[in-house]
Length: 436
Image (cartoon, rainbow, N blue to C red; front, top):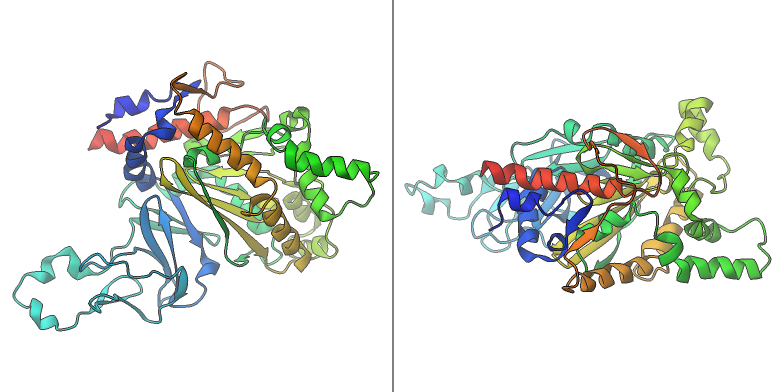
């Protein structure tokens, strides 16, 4: 079993050991320590709008249920019966009414998890059952926070607070929600979902890797740009070209866009501008936003065009395009990717149409652009099994003294955010190992 000091030695600052991506033992430790002690995205409250509404998902390797209780509050429960361990809910989503009922022996539970009834309960009299954990019902996760509609949970009963964990990084969620004239989002259908045969951290790192788009996406975005040139670059460009062409921007564009990092592994590309900065205006949208916020504040909101914001450990959001990607680890070399889109309540429908188009073009199992990345991840996963070299380099634009406890803004092609993520990885992996 790896010790805390051995785990810490896997990240040196400029380099990361390949075991971090390939070792089944490291993966198990991540589930036990990292995903249990950080704040992990569960879902959006609009996925469970009514009392009794629920949907099932995972936090690391733990199956959980997000459910709207009878008092209107959202609860996150482990998806297992306290009797024999049977999964309570197997449907992706639904409405359970006023209680959950186990399909095995019909134990039933309130939607906050409390035990409601047991058939033939007299069989437990004088057995001491009432003193067991099982008698309490379904177990709730350690802590839940609903931040402007986004539901996060910490599995551990005690640990870093939500506010201390995210800090100023929540400004990216704020910007996405503030883009709604009514100040709220609604889920727009189920996510696009497909499997990647690679380690989950490869996907998270790639969200702030700005040196790959013009290379890896030449086959997709590059082809589209070349075809458009052959057509004479007609204007106005349709939304599809506005979406895909910026992927072929030169290195200078990405250098100048900037990267901001926050403590605990959070960060975003697109400090000054991004690939989302030059989309055509949607008629009526600015006016609707100005009516809510005033013109100056509306300009501020729309002028913030952050590209990808990573919330460590495993989600990315795009405020300007109202998207969230959830990277769910299923093994050291297997990751399920879910790509959600949201409706800006009170905004013109054309905005949601553009968001849906972006998701289909870039992140769908049938997308053009996403499969460029997928091939790179899977090549890397196979390549890391080679004995030619044990270390992965994340040294680009590194300085000797990097303080990841402070917010920083740097050149848009720095790999500081990757180092920031691994600094947080070591921090949360080793904290509970040292206390064990």
